[in-house]
Image (cartoon, rainbow, N blue to C red; front, side, top):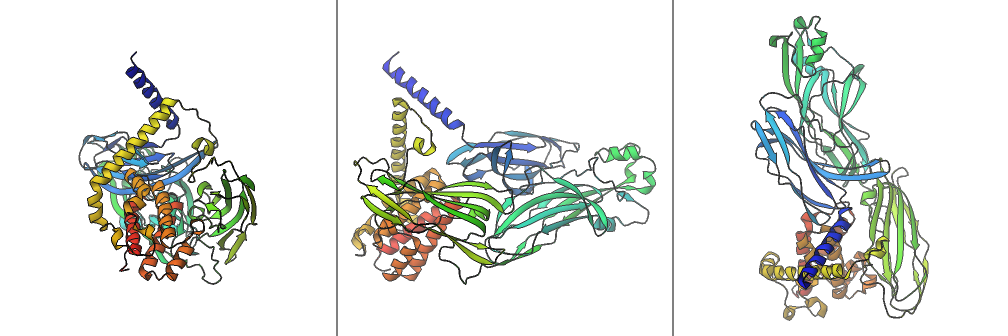
Length: 630
């Protein structure tokens, strides 16, 4: 075997090893159509689901030109725990009605999850001329389509579907089937959960499908029903029993104060009546009929079908603002009931090592929206942005569990240091007041190291961080370095080709000859200032983009406003900008961008759609601080 062949073989083996290593934890993109065969006037539900993804940036549906989209795209998300194994999923659904008969291949679904491009599998829908009696029955999660609500054996049997002489079918429908939205409360505070449930009450026989989805604008939404389930029960309302189908149940966390209206849902129904004179003693035939087969003993004139669209009445939620009086400076939106604990990994280490401070918040409330507490690092300690870990039970109301923030920090000089008490505050709805929790201060003793640092730029080796020991061959390591270099070259080429375009879109890059004497550092070209942010934006990695933009923007502001990097925070940035006479509009731009970046860093799903906008806003802030006209 030649040397070249050996190199190629080594490279191939290295690729296989890496592929096998990443296969176990990667996201899975599944596409399904339910049912796979329908009649020309029936509907099917297309589901585009991603399992096991930490971050879903985008789901691109296939071309649906052969179908009428009755409903969608509707978002599904949630988690299931079976025998201790937790599965998380997120996706979208469409309720489709074919425009013609035939066999249709649905392909071309794309997605981006955990920074990787995913391609969904193809599905086939067979559309026949005759009715199949198997309409889509996916009603939860995305509030998709509800069809063929024929009663199983356990359901109560009502004879309201028998139409007597002289009875008005419209009046009978209005009395015996309706859609209702139920909330567990009509008033709450910002951040306090509300449970909303959509139910179909019926004493008739019908086929139904959802044609309009309720709007949850102004809320963070967590669905409490697993996709594909329609819960059935018998309920009494105004002295009458009904078969009740729960179409959707969700917990909503209000994001802003005011009267927020939940839009109504609409459900199309085909109601089946049998005229009394044809009913007689054909009970077995009737049961067959309501298995969606027309009995031969009942002629067509004995059956009456009525179509009606049901609409739920809009529900209004009065969302009260959190009180401004006695609001702690440390309050960052946590609402519920929580415990707070802060610990350091070790109090004594050398200047070669990195310290770790861990904050654990446990309890129940709007935990998905809790952000990292602010730490006032003392002079001489360099703190880094925290890493966040969630262990949440999202199917409880409110959300319960724990949220862990791990802060890494370094101390360049030996000596004794003290990290002051850390404060976490939240609003307790039951008590109607703010609660402040404080940690004890931490004393550190740092001794002089050998100068061989084991920590660099807040990045621990992956094997050390995850507790995994991996022995990679020299070939694989070399290949990884080569790929990194290749990506850097491609990114550089792309930037050179698109530099003119970027300049046209976001304005001219500031030249050092026109820079303000505020600070020489501010004359650095924006494309160099935000190089890592731009690289992650090109790659479509939204999570790493916001981390990079947060770090690079704060470093620039620290230099521009002459703030020590170890003490920089949003509070110190705004204070210094005010003291240095920065224009009010620019100060507001800085504060708003920092808030928006922080929101993306700590929300469950960072939005890839906002990357370009925030990048441009960062460039504009640089321009404002380096332009003497501002």
